[in-house]
Image 1 (cartoon, rainbow, N blue to C red):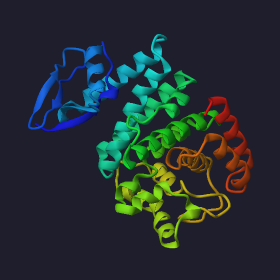
Image 2: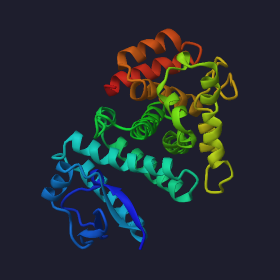
Image 3: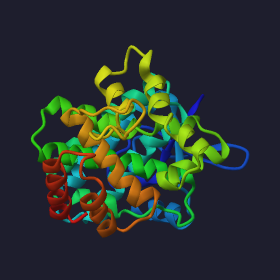
Length: 317
């Protein structure tokens, strides 16, 4: 039997699982909770105390696990006694699990389907709670010395969440919001194809890169688009957004130096830039917003910059 890893942070006590859960020991996998039970709070607490981040389920139970996540999210969102931090923990856990899967297996239909499901969940829960977006952004990585992969997974979830909320703030069509949610999760998937020191480029200021490094970094939107380009299950709209997420109205973007952007392309570009500056480059939010006022004029429509700043301040980001 094959096993699929799941994150402890996606489990909620007092909700029947519907699938068996296993724990991995050095030389074997053991049953941890039976599917007809729920997982008690003290058991979740024990796992977190011992810094166990992952449990396992049978590959065949993946669909039931996704249904379980949806039940947990729906119940948490409607329960006023559940804190924003707890709600954000569930949402981020589910989102980062999907991002991890995307980066580990970007070519597969299962990864793409997981991104669509996660985007739909984000749309639903963000629409139910105005404070949740801030909770997602404020959610700290579990490990202070997090790996580059973990930081990029957080960046993916943040960008997707930001795109969804900003697109709805702008009253973009429902289909556009859905495409942006998936594209936000996938936009930097090329990171998974880079090796060694090339991965570090995602954590470096573009203006500080050597010419050869900059040339390499500028390839990542095209590489990301090509991962999905020949896949029948992938939306052309999502692929187009991935390809254009580094483009600017000024023509200074890449890879195609576009000087006109659709509203959806502009939303992804501005949201991905904003969170890259904060999550990957560790800048303060005030410094990033000041940069938008000083250095991004011309790169984006002025009215979009004003609306984005208004949206960010309203959301407390």
